[in-house]
Image 1: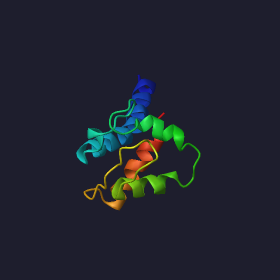
Image 2 (image 1 turned 180 degrees about the vertical axis):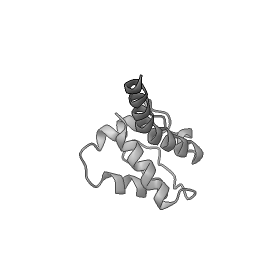
Image 3 (image 1 turned 45 degrees about the horizontal axis):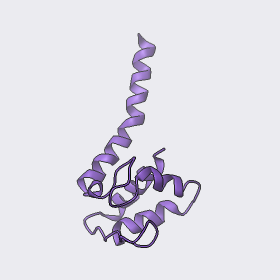
Length: 101
C-alpha cells in the first residue's frame, strides 16, 4: 500500500509541471494555433521538440520566437509576436515544448 502511494505521488509530481505549462500555453492563447500532437495553423509541439532535440540553443531561440514572432521555418504562415507573454513565461513554455515526446 505504501509503495503504491509513493508511486502515485511520484507520477503526480512528474506530470504536474507538464500540466501546468500546458495550462500556461492555453492561458496565453498558444493553443489557438498549436496543439501538442497535431498541426493546426502552426506546427505540433511534438514536431518542434523533435526538430530541435539536442540543440543546446533551442530553448532560448524558441523563447525569443514566442515573444517576438517569426517566419519561414514551418511554412508561409508567420507566427505573430505574443507581447502578453513575459520572458520568464516564454522560457517556461519553450522548455515545456522541448520536453514533449
